[in-house]
Length: 161
Ligand SMILES: [Zn+2]
Image 1 (spheres, helix red, strand yellow):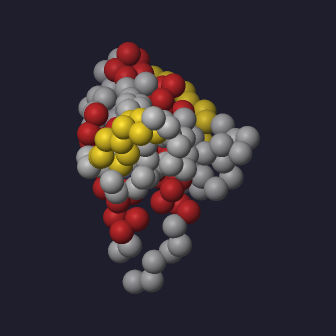
Image 2: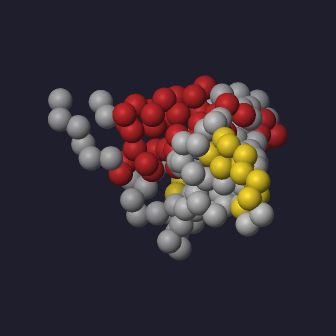
Image 3: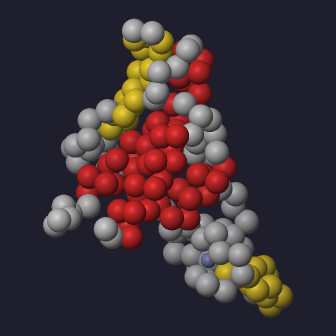
């Protein structure tokens, strides 16, 4: 199994088991999935033209100059698993969107999430059966995150067995 598949399946399983927002999963999404800098080793540089901290491992700095994607070292990890706004930033863009629906089903309530992206061949992802709409809504950000993971897994080449 490739490292990327292992990472994605691990994240998917953690998201599926989570019963609410989880900062450790937020960090894993940020670092492992998106490749953002979470490295702990930094060096202070006090030069007048570049005052701040620089990551010793990847070169990201306080000002977002060297990270490549404008990430600044002091940016906090978005609350992907707690906030729908943060979770939808994980939806693949290029003009496709995401849909969700919260429905009463036999014995409870489920939230369903599906991506409109043509490569999202996995169909929908749904929350476990919840007792109330409020509880299902609380799991919606986690479920949007999971739909991104399923999308990523669908992009991986098939593995020979
Ligand atoms: Zn770094």
